[in-house]
Length: 553
Image 1 (cartoon, rainbow, N blue to C red):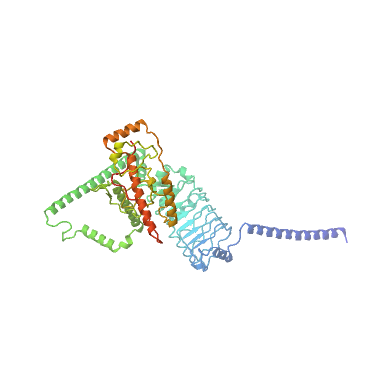
Image 2 (cartoon, rainbow, N blue to C red):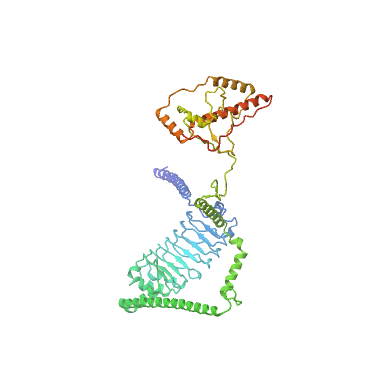
């Protein structure tokens, strides 16, 4: 075999191996690209994907696709608009932010009203033949260079086509708008440079009401941009984010007729007309007020001469009839018109007001004394219970530890034989007695002349009483009052009392002690006679009226 033939065979085998390697590389690259696209959500718009959208939100979508009136497929990364044959009831389709390069798949969407295809890759307006009821079309941020395919959409009202490539071909790219019924046209930030678009396109659109044209080169080429467009577009109401008022239209027409001077004159006329219209309105209002006052005076004069009043007039006026009907309706629907919260608040306020008024009357009313001057009466709503016992005893202070004044003979004679000496051998201990009762509240309370405090309510036994009596009798036999010489001042005071005939406190004290001793002796005798029965401790006889001890002079 020649060397040349061998080289050809080796070269052929090498080429064959390289072709196989290249095919494998291409397949691996295509698979990798597909995986990358799937990772970024670039799936196909299949029925399975649409079913996933339906299952993702059961509150928004029905399982039967023909019953759904809206569909959200935005931000899916799909390249082709398809598989919408069963969505016959669709009214709004939100398909923005995808990768659609053309409009398709809407043949059976006969009820479609709103179509949102902004931020896609659409280059031509087509595929809308099956949507005769389309009202709103949004094609912002696409690659459309020419307006076409809209003449059969007789219901199209709003076309939003910002940030496209319109206007490179001049007026020919927009002349199709003349055959449409568009009222709102948004063409901002395009490439429209020809100023003839105003008279040849916008001026011929009879239904145009709102126009957005800023961001295009033609906005700087049209002379007197706002006034010019307002003057030629008769039905325009809104231009570039600002409304067109009737005064603005009149000023624009005047500027178009005679320039700036004519515009100024027209604005002066507008101000004068506005002032005249205001004066007419004020005059009409004043006339209405005067007529109402005159009618009221005439009506009052007629009513003064009439024998009927407004309430007794048998002929009901329109006002009375309406008022009567309103009152009747309120009575029939009183339960529905009642405001429970307001009624509760009114009741609470009334109760607080009544309580405050009663308290003010109680505080401001003076105490009224009766004729005897012993009690006070008030009209208080509630009185404290009178079951609680009140101690009304009067404690008279007497300095009994002072030395007793010297008794002269004349004083002892004037005091009588009822004042024996305290050194008598018949001294008896004072008896126990209970506190004075409520009925005898004026009794003088002398604690040194009574028995042991706190034992009044205890009934002593007979042996204890005998033992106590014997002890007191034994002590009384040895009792001797201290013999002290009264000071000169006391002697002089005693002489003055003797001359005046007034008894001293000591003489009255000795008389009272003597009477108590006699009473106690009688009580002891009665207790000794009573055998086997519980004895009641008698109370000491109260002192005579007016016999309270005065304080020492």
